[in-house]
Amino acid sequence: MYFVEACRNVLFFAAACYFGFLNSVVIHNHLHQGVFHDKRLNRLFRCVLSFGALYPASANIPAHNLVHHQFEDDGQPDWAAPDIVDFRWNLLNLLHFPNVAGTRTFDGVQRWKAVLDRKAFTNQYILEQVVAFGLTIGLLIYDFWPGLFFIVLPQLYGARCILRINLIQHDRCDIDSEWNHSRNFVGRAFNWIMCNNGYHTIHHNKAGLHWSKLADAHDQEVKPRIDPSLDEPSM
Image (cartoon, rainbow, N blue to C red):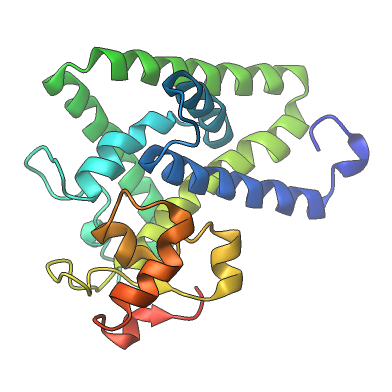
């Protein structure tokens, strides 16, 4: 799309935005359970994914894996909790949520790094920033308008949409409940394009479970126990 002039149209722009979003889904899954057995390959893949989202993929470790899943925090609530936006109109909450959650998340990551002095994490985090922003800036310099529409906007779309889905999956749920803390989207088509990220309750209860096993685990463990209203067919 960026290099082929014939592909510079609305259809391919929409496809680029979808792949930008899918990139953020893969970041989420990869940081829970790496694609490769080799740690070096996993770190290299994080750099590739960071370029696709225009933010360091490793930020998911403190922000999502630890704080959002409540294994570790800094004395503050979830940095991306649903109640950080409180407009009367839910559409405004959905639109504005990434602006608030994104800022809180990166502030939280900086505190987490400073307090725990994670040198290896910091080095990887900086490398991902250099790759993500360096490649993006280079492509913008080489050809600005295709770079903006087929690189930057899809990057931003994907990174912001994954935060919005987090809001939808937890808004007005009982976060203190063992089974009713998350809203699930259980349609087969939806989960095919989302790598099973619609099965959110079982993902929270078993964060290390591979995404390919979430559907069966949801049917066996969650469905008999959850409030049925929290299982939606699709978003």
